Length: 274
Image (cartoon, rainbow, N blue to C red; front, top):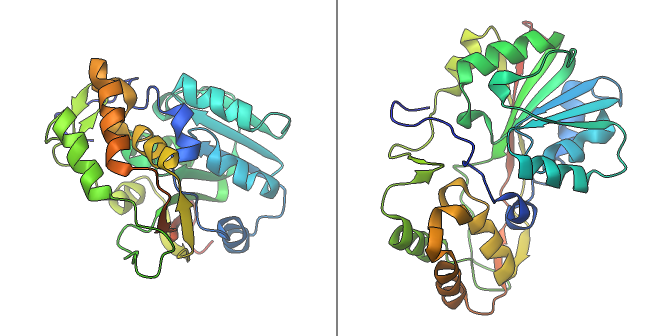
């Protein structure tokens, strides 16, 4: 990560109840794009590392015979189990990616849904590569960060993200919070070098287009704020209720609109040319 930050178990503590409602969905067509690019046909096994409340794993379950979702946060695993109740192909495991338990077996695909940057990336890349069968794939999935998302033509006012960020800074200070520590430089880049060092080849980049207008209630926006590592509920301490009061006053009744971000999937292979 960075020299002055160490992962701790409070990173996403208390966010699980807000995550599914607050986070924007992946672009429609993601599963179909991955199925075509990776030749997925309902067989094989998926390892979803840093699975959170199971959003990505459950969206891809139909493409595999078995899915294993791994996350270190108790609340996230509990939410994933609730969301996936009755889905027999999915197993949820509470563990850090750096400490994957033995006996998981081998996998066709490993996915990281906006989670890889929180890990000891060199260690995790090597560990996951050993779990992938020959020709298997590691896929990093995220919102397309550099994409402009215009607000013109939306049916409702846009979410006031700049004002929300200012309110968070007012309560938590100017430096980004993360668990018990600070991230003054943000999360690390250089993912390609990490995966190349681990022996992966590629990458192949897929972009699944977004752009459709999403309607967001004030409750959705509040949940989105509390789903972030930089503004988890516990970071506000005794000021948590006061912060939410001020946030709701800032937002007003809503609703809001924003354009769904496109989704980027970066595919790395265990073998050249696969």
